[in-house]
Amino acid sequence: MEKKLHLLESFTAKGSDGAIYKVCGYEHLVRDESLVGEDLWEPTGQAEYRLDTGRRVEVTHDGVMRIATTGVELHRQH
Image 1 (spheres, rainbow, N blue to C red):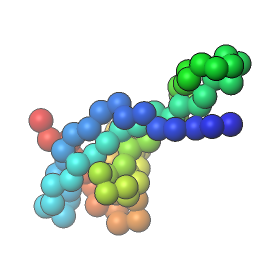
Image 2 (tube, rainbow, N blue to C red; image 1 turned 90 degrees about the vertical axis):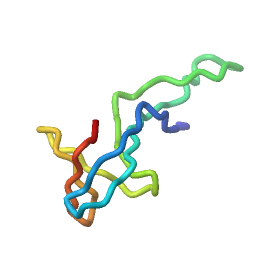
Image 3 (tube, helix red, strand yellow; image 1 turned 90 degrees about the horizontal axis):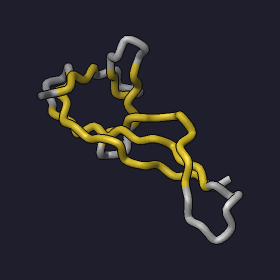
């Protein structure tokens, strides 16, 4: 099964370390193989957030964002 990511949003966030980060939100897509010759992709219902550097951002059920492995908490800037 072929998969790819589709950019949904990007925004800046301030980290608990004082640094400014660019965060990107993606949805997971899979190729619809039932349509031969077509290049159609379907969402899987899964999403993920990453920094523009590629580092993973974890989002808790209550919406708190943290950079994976470092624990730096991120707050969306408006």
